[in-house]
Image 1 (cartoon, rainbow, N blue to C red):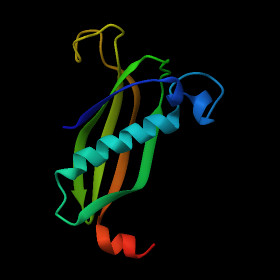
Image 2 (image 1 turned 90 degrees about the vertical axis):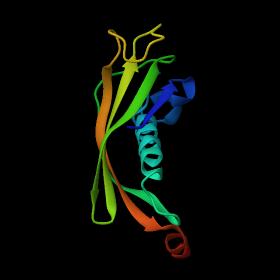
Image 3 (image 1 turned 180 degrees about the vertical axis):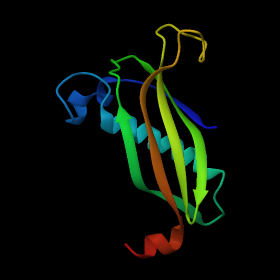
Image 4 (image 1 turned 120 degrees about the vertical axis):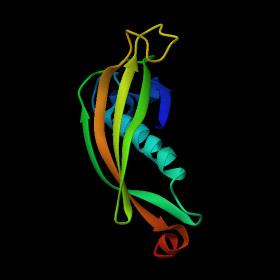
Length: 129
């Protein structure tokens, strides 16, 4: 499956993005990272000339992560249905100082969710704008 890794910066905080007033990882940023992981996972499944667009999201963001935290966002499953793809995604905080992703102290779940992406013809989609 696809995994993307990120480091929480000041620009990723709720304070910076206006989704809260504390300097912790913002929910809109974790959602953007999850969508990026689904785009990467979908890229290998699309025909030439096709792309995918997000159409539905369910997200639970249950753990705060501070500036400097290392976050691994993993697509854990992909289901094809009709003209779309449904992705199960989980974000885990890597233990501070952990050089070995997946080590014994890694894996505290920060957020989890489901992202649904419709598969569309790129040209046709853009011509409707």
